[in-house]
Image 1: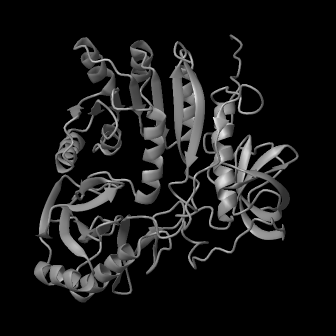
Image 2 (image 1 turned 180 degrees about the vertical axis):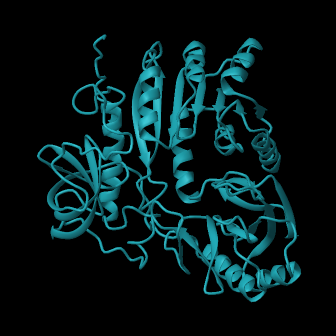
Length: 479
């Protein structure tokens, strides 16, 4: 009989594999916090093992309960501050420890700004391989913050649920879809709070049901509120699963009576079983299809689904820095890739010979053209399509850009667009970024032919871990 050899088998697929790490789930540990990560969690180490502790600050010694472990790092919840940082701040929001909206309210604001500057520096060094200290280093300026970093958000997107026969609305608890009912959010414009409260009250009184995402039943999914900060105009958007709203006229009238400044009440229908807020169909129930607002001298029409920066005060700071870095004197041709509804393009058009904006979303290009007309801007041309396709086509037509501005989504620039920029060789590139890691990655590619002169962080979202930045690049032939 032939001899058989047993195959060596690994653990059963359902078997729990113990990791060789110095902590275990459920254990309470004492740890020194040496820094913060990009999401605002404290970073500590136990026997060389990295532990991220929500709510802890650099320079603190804390007790924390381990919630989750991986091979190289783990996560823990703060249970006690043994030695507090001098920068620890008492969060004014009563729901701060339950809501996942603000991760840095417990850190003094000036220190938040320093932290965000360091996040940009760390990413440039670690991912981009750039020198950020000493001679020949890239200058990363101190973060431009707000004199009053509260009540800055001009848009609220609030999920609606039901508890004890009444509608509730607020934000999801961190890492969950459990709604925390709230009447006030300290980073939202007060008109947002007032509008959401009015809808909850009126819809409850009229027996309008809330959407249940588990059962996929009920009517009212979200309330979206947009505020024109300079104009005072308010838009209320009711996102529903069906087009028919019971006692619709009474609901509309209640919103009109209770919400000061409301000029637009809109319904969006989203029947799909999805986490995406908006559906494809939008109808105006009362008032205008749009509201208006200004960023600096530029007026914008804002529809229910159009993108518009949520912090207009800091957006003006960001765009003025973009305009400064573009170095426009009135003779330059500028290309704005990822132009959206034309916000940056129209700023650039003030001091440029001509601005060409490209955006892959046709509806955004329609808004861009409307906003150009609204402001009487005649030296801006917008075209829908992928930037890496449209820009070379413009080049074939003889359009040469002196400056290219990019403002990509969090995933950064398309690789083909970076190649196109390198081939077009504009004198300057201005990179507006909402993600320091993809900024560093893309600058590393562009550094083949461009010198990264300086980077300016801007605090668009105080009390959160997010940071935006503007980078100036100069073609090496012109340095």
